[in-house]
Image 1 (cartoon, rainbow, N blue to C red):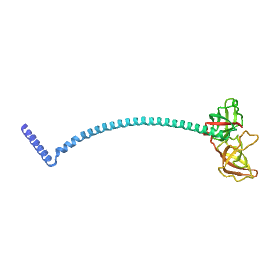
Image 2: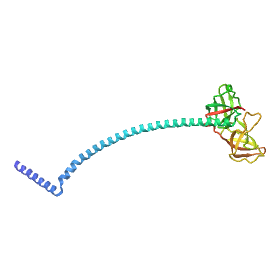
Image 3: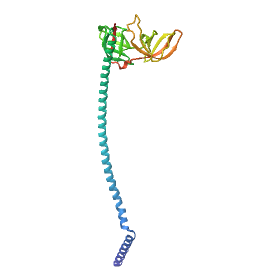
Image 4: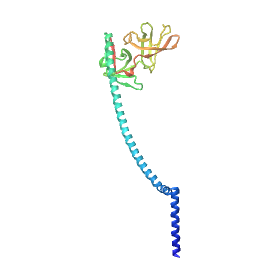
Length: 266
């Protein structure tokens, strides 16, 4: 009985081997079986290789990003240094310009007694009032005009022994007698607390055109020198029965001023 079972097993093995041989001959089944058997290992191997490559690329990106950040910080520092150098250069140019303007104005007005002063700081909220480094010990008095680049920019409003306060012509407290340059049309120029000024003139007036220059008027009670530019006309604002109102703007903006000249008299 054992021999009969053994013969059956041998017979089945032979049949199975013959079938595999035939299938391999007909359909190349061994290669397909090998493909299905090895493909998971191949996929896993590629995934591991790709993961290593991705990790390596990610590390390179992080390193490149850190290097780029360092370059950006370096460029920012260089930019700040350039801005500071440019600001100092502009300040030097402004100082030279103001010095030249001062000398020209002094040469054109040899009888004027001018006291040169430096701006110490600007007062809030609009930084339109200045503190300058000359005071009563230098002969400065309240009401004296302050000049920059040949134009009136304000009046002395407060005096201490070693410093003074300059109120901008745009301040509401400042009123300056002026006239239209080259004519006998007089009026009062008033500040409004902004860059816009108000000019009041009598209702019977000659035609006034935009951008015409207003200069200081010679008034006995005023400390102002005559014929110094102050502002320029902009628009007609109001026509009344007694006076006509125009708007004007200062010729010289006080925000950029570093040096001034106090007019002490002539």
